[in-house]
Amino acid sequence: MSSVRKTETIPQWKQEEVDELVDFIESFNSVGIVGVAGIPSRQLQAMRRELHGSADVRMSRNTLTVRALEEVNDGVEELTQYVAGQVALIGTNDNPFGLFKQLEASKTPAPINAGEVAPNDVVIPEGDTGVDPGPFVGELQTVGAAARIQDGSIMVTEDSKVLEEGEVVDDDLANVLTELGIEPKEVGLDLKGVYSEGVLFEPDELEIDVDEYEADIRSAAAAARNLSVNAAYPTAATAGTLLAKASGEAKSVGLFAEIESPDVVPDLIGKADAQLRSLAAQIDDEEALPEELQGVEAAPAPETDDADEEEEQAEEEDDTDDAEAADDDADDGDDGGDGLGAMFG
Image 1 (cartoon, rainbow, N blue to C red):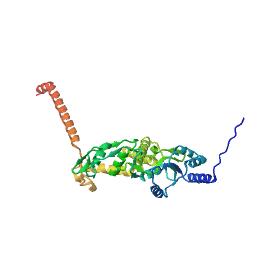
Image 2 (image 1 turned 45 degrees about the horizontal axis):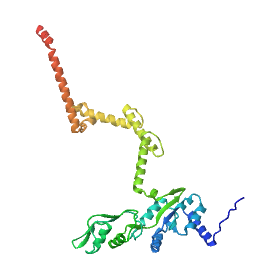
Image 3 (image 1 turned 30 degrees about the horizontal axis):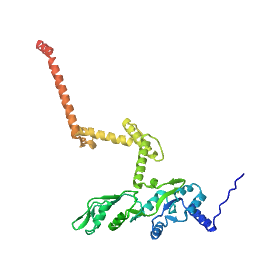
Image 4 (image 1 turned 90 degrees about the horizontal axis):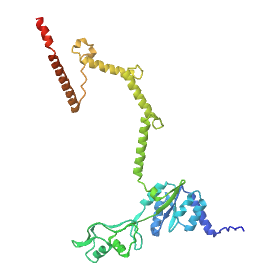
């Protein structure tokens, strides 16, 4: 008995919506899913205007979004795992890292309501609450804040963590935070995942320090360049440096070996001229010198630091000690010489 596959039919308006979603998905290099839960309609519209020109947001029913993603296929259907709750499609021709950074920068602080889950630790900071003495000090203490009346005002004496990340906000805490004007959550488009050029990215993979990452790349490139030069491994980036280095080393060898190469001769002549002038400066009788060498001053002695002077002085003392020791040895062996001197008068 063969089974008959039934083809699901959907209303025309739904198919048109799916077709529009498919066109939306295929018109961008990068497509993602963003959470829009808890964002007031007016603020959502403001965010869409702020993204205009760099990204576009498209909202639809989740079932139709899933159908469109699956219809496009080509790997983008991996985004269907994020289609749950209040979400929307987002498309951009920017890279995923730039999109994530822009979405994070567009988020704004907002108060948290009773029944919501804290997105991070909630802390009431130390300081003057600005509230006059009254029942509010008891409310602060009830939620776990270190509070007391001081100098005619209610003070929080130290930073007080009143709720941990993942815990649910109760009515008492929500009222206290509202009274203090503390907004512990951020409202904005929450990127769930983005598909770009065959790769699926999640938020934790996109949350990087761009400046630090760029510095690491520059450091790695410099280290690779140094390795290539030191290993004499020519590449397009290091060939010029290697040729310059080889040219300099060849010239140094030519100067040391006094090779009369056209590239070295001017330096050899300059070296010989300097040596000649240095020698001429040591001759006291100027009449013995050609006119152009008369009055030449000796080159200044190279400066030496204290360590070098101390080392030279120690070497001189060692030489003196060795000479004195040699003299003593000579004196010990002069008995025979004295005898011969006396014999021959």
